[in-house]
Length: 551
Ligand code: HEM
Image (cartoon, rainbow, N blue to C red; front, side, top):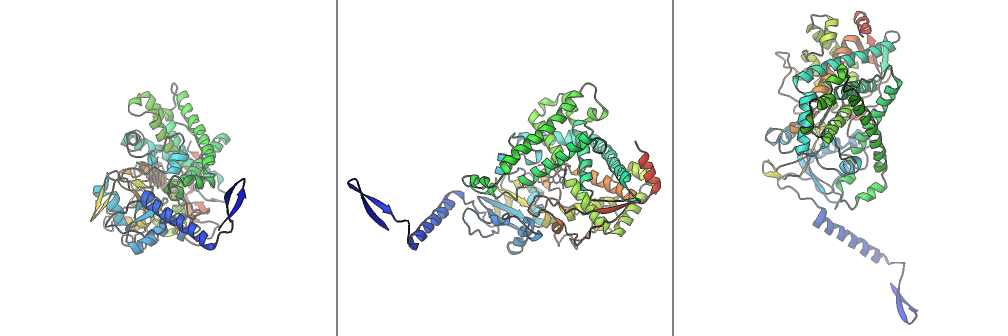
């Protein structure tokens, strides 16, 4: 309603603050129409023909509610929500998340179709995400796993694989380091054992173990968390910072990554991520520089560990033409962050399962000892050389499958068109692997939520059945590069723990063994079980005396 007030010879219109209800509706409807039109013209991603689509009724937003608000229970975790949608739309479908059209694979077969076979080279990039690549990584040096496809990525991956992780000579050396560090971990448990047992949640000790291995291989730096208070503080700082960064960089937690750039500042206003991440990056740089300086200072009088380290050999061999300093930095970053949570969390979950499965422990021990003439000391000293016990390999595989520490894997981006039946998934499309759904696919895994190591063994030969796989390390051309190292760490730890201890439930009551229900952070990228103590009782006194005497 407009009235008139005479001012100095002319008439000014006055807006009546009390708009009639019709006016408010008119404004609301115009706004809505504007949003729909803008969405239609600018932000709506193009749907892929002939591929089932989850209906998207909310402009700009689409189905982002799958990732937001934050999950409170296992049912709200994104992998469960995506799996639920698969019951209606099939195991492979497209879903609109903000401005992105994401293709999600939710079964064993659909993951193989999209990540392996002839598509193996067509989906080998990572999407650029605003929170991680824009805000968190201010130095623009990413881990190998988060670097988009290109020359830099290829060089880093190749160098890391050949010089550090996968060639037979470094695999042999890595196994020796793993064995020594596993022995140190168990020695510290023996030292803490009162009345012949110790009750502990092993995750933190296992993080120290993994960190020690990673620092020796990368820098030749020997961290001593048991004997040196400064080193312990340093290890705790690294574990805290790396865990925090992993949590806030998640591709399934940051809805702003999927929204138009114009809306993002609004989300950032209510989020302290930006300022926290700046502090975390300063803290991370501090320890990375410390290790780099350590190796540089020891170039002229190197210890054996320094001599075998990645950094020492990079400078000694003059590899600057193969890899520039940023790419080397990217590998170092990967080494200190990748696996720091994943490996220990898997190991703790294996211990949770074994504490409830005395028959599995008994069989495992018998089978392991059989490989070493029933001599526990020989088994202790040599179990790292080769993964020669199929039953132990089966336990590791079953843990990785059932636990699925990264239930939504890491996101991918297609680098070429992918043809799937009548559908063409265009280049540049984001793909999500629901690894949880693939690893618990009933059509492939009998009783998928039960811990059955035998499922990995050929019933006739007793050897590992190579026709089945799991997706906990991802799949295809960007599959986890550290899978051999992580596997060996789990294998050696498992062998040594089973040789040394009887593993039984601790004081905590376990209401469930379902990893999703044990998870403290259902919305997070990784499954982190609530703290659970397990009882480790020394079973072989001769062996424990032998290990205590090891220098
Ligand atoms: C149990 C422990 C671990 C698990 C479950 C795990 C899992 C994963 C997963 C799911 C991916 C994404 C794969 C894909 O997109 O298909 C990945 C990537 C990667 N992981 Fe691991 N990881 C573990 C330990 C490690 C360790 C110890 C290292 C390094 C020493 C490592 C290095 C990498 C690298 C470099 C990539 C990126 C590969 C690429 O993008 O080319 N991981 N990991």
